[in-house]
Length: 398
Image (cartoon, rainbow, N blue to C red):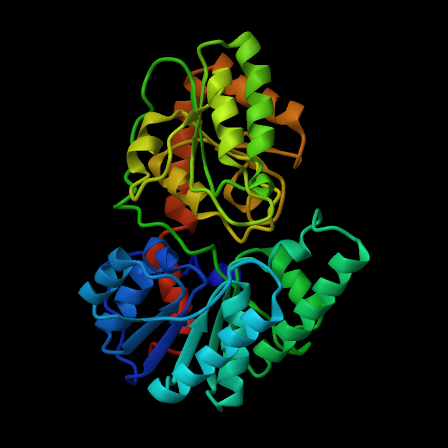
């Protein structure tokens, strides 16, 4: 199934799926919260179709467990270090998954993000689990243009390629979010040459939950929502904000996101310094980003991380906000430059500042481009439409 298949499917969120053989399905994630933030509608569909759905992830998160239980999905905690290359930790993850799979006997596994794909994929292969469906939400920073070309970086990339090949061997389907990931899968022969990855437009967004809202009046309010990592472009956002404030002192620059253990993490001291400087409104973290999207005029994500398709941008599109982001795989798939936003070169602070200044100079631009953002979300990123593509590719419709 190719990208154009998405547009041919009905978008009605209440359309029933045809019955499929009942299966035990294991969903494997690297972050428990992502199960409800990014996969809730898919999990609902699987459970409501009568499948026995079991979610695996690290961390104890009572709110996630409760939300999953309410839709009939079981949760099992596994050991997993989301970042880092400690082989002992990764072996522990692999062995834990293999032991759990032996016990619950899934008919199908659906892992997403790098470590779940690799270790759940290989564990399932060793147990003869034939239905293995992979969601490549991004191949990982090691495959990015800024991932580095040092001997260490290239060696890590080579190792990851070999592990991906082992996980993907005889896969039922491999979904990708953007052309760059599909091309890398082909370039590094992660799949047999005769097998192509299946394109989907990200994890999708619930267009009813993220309803369109007119931008508020007043001075421009720019909002960035992301994990607090340098790779997400936080520093460039701050530097561009300094430049824009010289000409537009009423402009506000907001940042919403949680601190991270990643080596490229932004520190609390950095955030406090920017607040003290008067350049940043740090909004902390939230379980509901909608009020912050409604209160902003423009959404900004200057990421140079190897994104799949950023969910934060999809939520901004659905709310009806123009987007400024980088001309990189995944990010650029959400913007038609000059129509619903702007793309800039990664790490280019002046280009980012110029794009933000354009909206500060012309307040009406936020409203007109924001409407086009909503239209794009309805056309390409409806979560119910995307889930139909996923379920068809997994063979879960008859």
